[in-house]
Amino acid sequence: MKNLMKAAHKMAKEIKAEYPEVNYKFQLGLCISYLSKENNEAVTDVVYAAAEKAVNELGADDFKWNTWEKNGLKRIYISLVWYKKGRISKETKCGYIDVIADEYVTVDKYTKIYNVISKEVA
Image 1 (cartoon, helix red, strand yellow):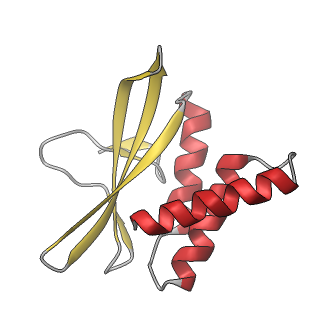
Image 2 (cartoon, rainbow, N blue to C red):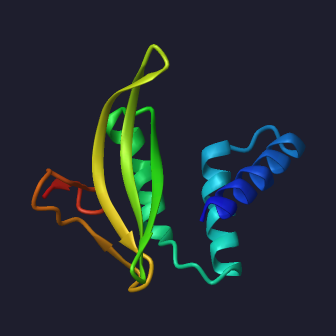
């Protein structure tokens, strides 16, 4: 997944350089989607689009993805982030995408999770 993100950033930067009017975050999402399908990795486009929308609706500065793999499981954790003076001042967890089952999971018994699709706190 790390290589996928590097390749997606590289592709998005090249497109942004050629077409300056393109929104970089949106283009990055398209590149991730394209490369993940090309590599047969199941990154859910709907969740990515919903996270992008949640950033705008909640006034977050950005969102981030973190890939976790262990014992045959593969998950992509999503968080909305707010920055203050160049550092993360607030982070809201949004659950994870189970890459193997290709589903969005918003259940965590230890922390509150913001569901970016239903726009509710679970």
